[in-house]
Length: 570
View: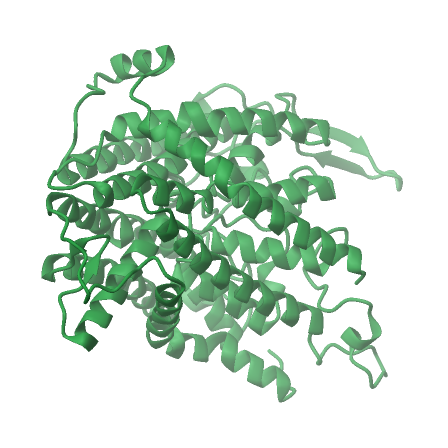
């Protein structure tokens, strides 16, 4: 691996961090503007909503959940009636089975984008656009709207209003996601991504054999897939497919897109609550965790697997190669960019992959799993920031217990109700993951879907439910999840992971804090906009996450790492 490859990774990270301020300023402008555009006003009339209504957290949550429910039912219907719709030039049939349609509708309406199917062989062009891409836009805008509502709640004083869900959703779509994705799709077409409604191409290979090359409206899906931290893919191979990711430039743009909006929310947060230092502390927490996990993935993949040896050779393959573990990776992207992609897609809960995560080294898989388990390493649109606020409340509560004072956060007293709601959100995440993983381990014939035994087989199941509950959507693809049991159970887990943790509990917390008056700062108030609090927050996240998930990680990637070092394979 040459220094130039590391330079590319460093440059990408610098660009992402430099864009935090301008994108953050634009986000503040979008969600504080008092004026509506003509297109927005037309949309409000068509929806029959009052854009001037100021919603309580209960009303905001109701609008969010009901709109998502309607879109999920619409998506399910579109999938089940696929043979009725136009734009199916490849005559893909039959439509997805009921359990697969349920899983897919729930997955895409919640910004999870878990796919238990191959896109090019399962969905028509119509459903790739009208169902998949539509829900990619709206689910991303829903998460962002919830994040903005929480920010408003934290900035308010003695009020019970969090804004208007329909206004936040519409502005996120029209002023942010659609313009960025339109420009990005044009760049992707320039780089060689297909964007066509013509059928698959039938060609003859150099050997004279016939081959069918699938294509379709790929570029438009790829743009929102990463800008909206959605994941999923037009093709089963996802972003490793040359039509989804044809050049190193598109690979870099995919990474930049995933980190375009989420980090900038910290700057928007600091600006909207009028405490920019607090926003920078949150950004520092995100960045510290991200760079730490990136280091684990890169080091693990660069060292490779010592058990992979050349036939008859004493040296390890990793020692004989210029790189490390290249199994399941695109050679054109290399280990450095692949490690950055792996870290980014699991940190930002995107779920897109340009490498086979099932082929990661045990500690590489450990890092990817851990980012989703913590669910607070940048995280998805709005949701990552909400999760960090949840941990901040838990941290000030724990510190308050130590010094014997009522905890405060952003000049608001944190009392029993807020702590209970934050704890509910915090506990719902591991409870859902671990319970469904346990059920899968004892469910009749569920283990038949595994491709591996031992710790790695456990990791495949554990990863599937973690990815679903964290609204990520990536997979250790050695697990065949397209069965009635897995489609149904993962779909339910996805639903619980989206709404029970963290959206609804933290919207309730924001509503409670918004209604409270601000208290004056005293000599006993612990400042939360300092480096010291940032360190406390990182430590709290790692300790709480470690105590919660270490037993499961010990059964999976950690056990596999020790077995690998001991010379045992599966």
